[in-house]
Image 1 (cartoon, rainbow, N blue to C red):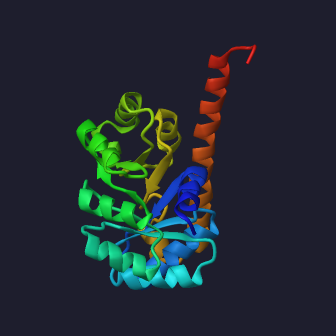
Image 2: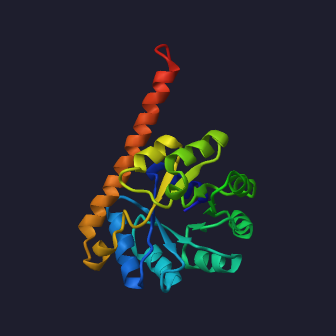
Length: 228
């Protein structure tokens, strides 16, 4: 799949499932469950045991998935992830070497950033998106909205503390997508192998994105006036 197609899935669905679990088996189960619920963009953090093997197996066996690697710290690990079949790379902090490597490989990349300076720096070295993390803990949608007002042309992903209660508000504040972990993939649902529950949560979060975008579209129509 080409880079513009991968970007399109981020922009269309608006959800990145972050599979932060404790075993290879749990990661496979979680990823396949969210994909079945319609959330096809799945991040496997490199903290997952045998994460690169998980990425490889998901890429080979799960139709429709857009699987990527999270917590990528350097170009060497980035290359290993790409060799395994990763279609995007992300990190929890601002690592220009990883962004520059991904840009040269023509692969979607989005680093973590928090301050305005970090957002500008990430965008300046050719990030595709900028992940604002941990978003909910340092001002939530209000803070993300402030960043969006400062940098309206930089596509921001809200991550860290996104819940069912605030998901639509992050979209309204200007996020193009949401990174969701435990709220989408609850640990007890993994333990009990409740794939239907995870699938329902996936559909709910997709619905929150749509709700936020519908409100934004209605707001834009009102601003345009009756003659538009």
